Length: 249
Length: 249
DNA sequence: CAATCGTATCAACGCAGGTTAGTTTGATCC
DNA sequence: GGATCAAACTAACCTGCGTTGATACGATTG
Image 1 (cartoon, rainbow over the protein chains, first blue to last red):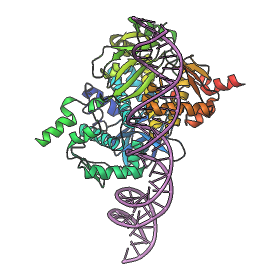
Image 2: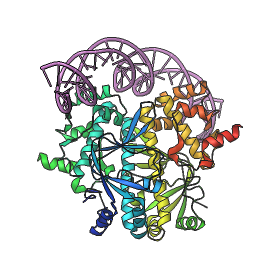
Image 3: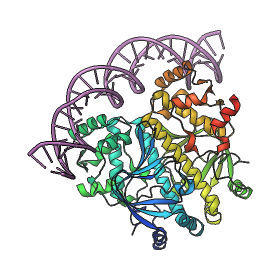
Image 4: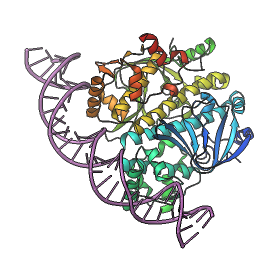
């Protein structure tokens, strides 16, 4: 089951068995990729899209001078570059962060879904718009939060997304990102991210060591990062708050 | 013709007469709105979307403490909240900046297009993904550019978009944004935006006075803001560079 | 005409985060 | 065991932007 986690826990877009099967049968290939492998380059015409099954993938804009800004991070279940289907080519690069397993879905198969299964198509559209909503939250983060807030916000978001993918219990999860990766996500230098991580640790807001994130009190961290999960369109029953509360009770 | 400017000048998604007519006939209402009028509030279920005919509209995320980050600015021809159709409700607020004229399109009409005109639907999807591509460029701006660069980048982007909408000649255009608006776009304070505007003027990069933007040398401004228009998916013949060159020859 | 309000402008000061240049830790491999 | 490398961590210094508060300008209104 390649699409098992796709749209999992999202509000109002549950896939029925039929749709699930249609998507599954659209997969033509499964690949295993090493860390830091380029999946897509900006400006190259694409006739397939990539669903992430395992590992972490990043999307980034690069000024070809060493400065790189991540614009998205993807976890298992994300349809990484589904937007390449309507767009034809991408405006940014896509690269694995960790080793990853991906499923390839040709655009010809999506074309068939477009014509024959309009309601499944709308759910695919929805998926690309969640990514856009996350972009907007990232804009808020970069534009209006200080360094502590940015990191806190990102960790809250990641926790919420991993909870809904079934990969976090609401307090702890593995996250194989380096501090340098975090700095490219949060618009900071790696040196400053290091300072921030220490402070988060000192204030008992979050401990991130050897790829393990531990959030003792998700609500406090959320407050520090002004994090409000609404933009993730997560189904009520799976919201990180309710999960965290269920555990702390 | 309400949809005259919609997707104008975009690569590979020209609307044929039939599609144009279908969209036109989906309009049920045209409204005139005053400046700073709220169009949509976050979290409210929507059964219509809004096409902008005249004026400027902004989308923003607000921390309810006075800090506001704009996540998008829309010009005539933009389908401001088309993403509300698949999403159902928005994760942010939408407000006019200037007085504006809008066309309302009910989601029921979009539903009909979804089922009956899959290829028009794909073009609508495309339109929402352009917005996402612009979000990404804004992320780069906020994450990796200094204050001068951010303002320069925004002005280049706006110039390019207005050229393709037929509202800029590539060097000059009217833009009824205040310096405070610019600060909420660029993640700066209005005081610092003022410093930046002076410096842009002193360096002959850009003069912005009483709602009129004048860019003597678009290439120089683009270099300062590391602006590359590819993400706007503008058709070759309408790219701002070629327009600017045509004029300067 | 004066009063008012939104916007632009400027100067003085402080600090968050960048820059530079390291050292330490831990994993992997010979 | 030592060698190597990536990642984490630190300190010292510097600067770009935020903050505060005041003034100027121009449009609108009474």
